[in-house]
Image (cartoon, rainbow, N blue to C red; front, side, top):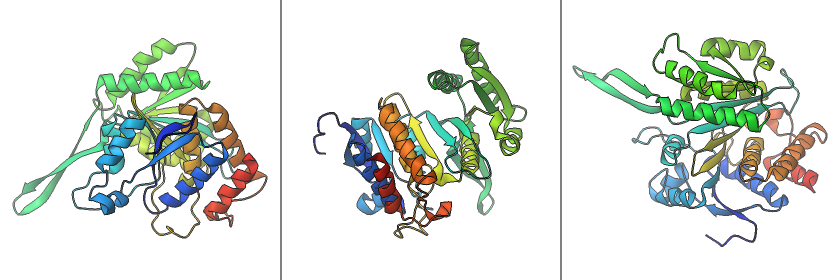
Length: 343
């Protein structure tokens, strides 16, 4: 890895699979126009990691993130079969990235306007960690499928504390805790109990209420403006974060941050979209907004504000949009339009 220039922040860059290299290239160009705040150590993961060294999460990539404590990554593909676990899940476990933050804000007026939500998801427990297995019966090796989920009180308190501190820092007024404690009484009941306990330390600063997950999903469609922040278990957070992305135009508009005590990884939350890979038409906004979250994380709120404003003006004043937003701009044409606004 090259030595960073003065004032540059060392960070790992993972281009990813499918459209990943295209949206990463566009995002890096925009960051360069902001003064190149990061010094990149480029590493591989996903299918690119397998092609390079037979592992979707190579040791060199892990070592780089451990060294920098900071990464920006494109979408990764986990191979079907072959015994490979989700690369994203492995990254969260490797660095104990316990908090997943997914904001959703209206950039392009559509069916829902003035949406401004933040979902905080517990990232390393629950059902989503994929601890599942089969039990053989007779000659059927997959006769019974079993999945286990685990939430600890300490982990539930930790993510609740993170969410309330985030609310205070970002002038958010209310957190809605999402659960299924009426049915999953232990697994999500402990999550709700811990959140209520932590909420006592924020009385008068941050309001808390709660919703059963199915009711919350319905209310997000009927009246999303009643919500400010959502605090979710791992699986429910994965599902509802995609739903709130749909309120603002889809996953192409949705950034994500995975934050732990020693490392943070920022990402586009959409998939690798192999059907359009190499065509230069992918929407890079999700990763650009993730880069904005990364800038905020390292204390460069000034650059994050400039980046978001430039994206906003590019979309709504210049009317430069990619095909998924009913425009005709290529990935790099959109990046060039944002760069022009930054200039």
